[in-house]
Length: 337
Ligand code: DOR
Ligand code: ZN
Image (tube, rainbow, N blue to C red):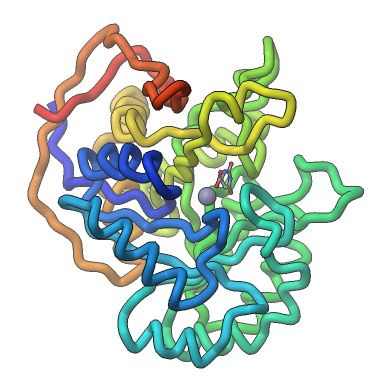
């Protein structure tokens, strides 16, 4: 048996409509807090869109604290941001480089032209969450994250020393090292980037359900992520980047990027820490480190999980005429007692 605080997921995509209802229910079962991403088909760039989305999410929510984000781009108005902060409508700003991933066609082409926004966030103590990939049509996708550190992130940390930054869903040793070396920056890590690598993703046959952005990297990088997460280092915490796409958009000619991991993510993380004999650091990775980075209080009531061997996993969650593909890694499974 393991007793832990109810976990937090500091990076999740809820989407809209029926998918939102399904995904939020799974989140309610597992998490005390979630940080919700703003890359809807029509991104959340202003108060009107945010208020509508907030109402939709909060109507369907039961027992999880929802932290909202806005989609930061050059269309955001400082006066509108001010007003939303005054009314406590969002918690963090998310920045997507242009064409980096799903629904990023309104993303930012040149972050160095966004200084007035970064100054504003810094002044108002609003965290900046980054999709950390440098996008250039000639660059190899495997190099995007490393280049982002070099071209964008180094500039950001140098010029906005008091801005609180989260480098989201890190996938490389370079990012682990960068985050360790710099102040005011922490990183979220997903289940699938911890548990998979290029061999398991495409070494044998290609698994579209593991295709995501940033793309899953080699064993060398996976090892570095694992040691950062398992060490309990306060700069690294859980953010699943759980990103539902219907099966028909995954198993097709142009596979969408995104791994839907919510259903089994806590179980996978528990099994990882248990099998690595690091259960003493579980609360740090799943609850404490993220809350510390974001200055959040958390519920410290303990929840008991028990381990089930050779559990029968549900690979697909039915959805009208289609389904969502649940990500799972281990044979053993942890359930709430
Ligand atoms: O694989 C991904 N899917 N990475 C992201 O950054 C976005 C996400 C999505 O929204 O589908
Ligand atoms: Zn994401």
